[in-house]
Length: 232
Image 1 (cartoon, one colour):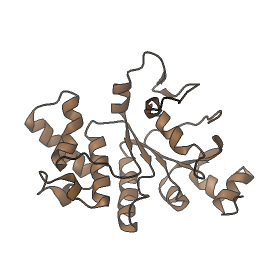
Image 2 (cartoon, rainbow, N blue to C red):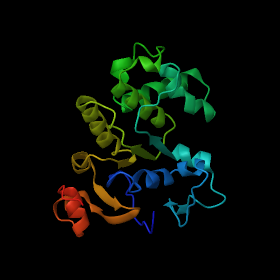
Image 3 (cartoon, rainbow, N blue to C red):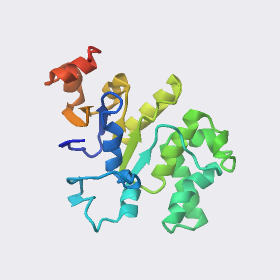
Image 4 (spheres, one colour):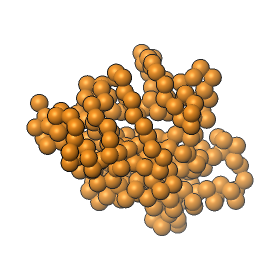
């Protein structure tokens, strides 16, 4: 990526769109330093979160990833029960009381719009859930540690239209309390649910702004070509 500059507004949904390989997911993973896990990755510049550069040499990466959670393209529940998936993070961060953990389980699953579907089978394997339910479980698992920002990397690409609609509705609901950044190949999805959109091409941020303007009156010809399907 080159010279990417963009704001991510609190309690808003920011979408990143663009062709495959343009850098969307790479940029998303920069926001919670997931790219640190890639040996050849090198980062220059700053990403400021509450006025502090998350790439500062003294940054606490574990604390950062608690504050900025991530949902991946394919549902990735842990091979354990529904309940244990939710309590895993809180336990790592020192919460051990049964009452408090039970409250976290209920709250997180309710926020992820999954509680009514699984309340009577919390001790069943997470893999017994459908694909859409598994993705909402992963969202609940992220919410269990009370993040401030939720990163979503094509969270509906492996889901059917009904499950996709539930995730979209959920993202909009969550943006009332959390800041959401979503990578999507689905331009209709970006236009439906996001407040701001960035169009990327070949590692560059071609255009960024209010979603309605980006889709209806973009400043850049390349953006217009991509959105109208005349790309290339």
